[in-house]
Image (tube, rainbow, N blue to C red; front, side, top):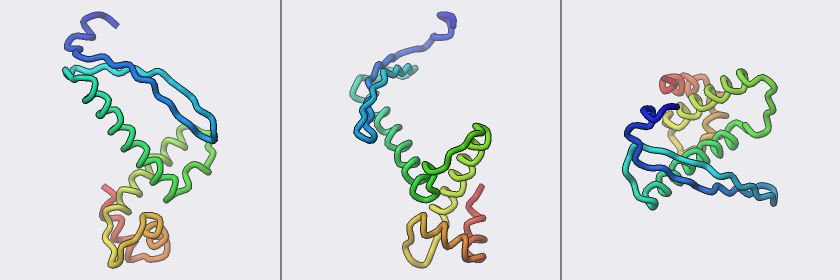
Length: 125
């Protein structure tokens, strides 16, 4: 990259990301750049908010579709299924039901009820 590619750069941030899973902690240093002039507090909040959304989506995909249990050898196939699951999850969230139901319950209802499945299809795109 050339210096001209960085024109307008206002902020650079360095953050230590720590993750604990199965009693094992890993750390990773990550860097962010932006053309917005922000202070450290606002940058940190924006990063946390972004990862909160990502973690919520991943949790929903795992609960509704057991996504973590599936091992894929073909990266293109895995990416395609991931996109499809996100589209379906969005449709399930938007489809109304008479009683309050979880997304997982809506998925099972869509599998067994042609009428509800048709209702969900309205929200696909």
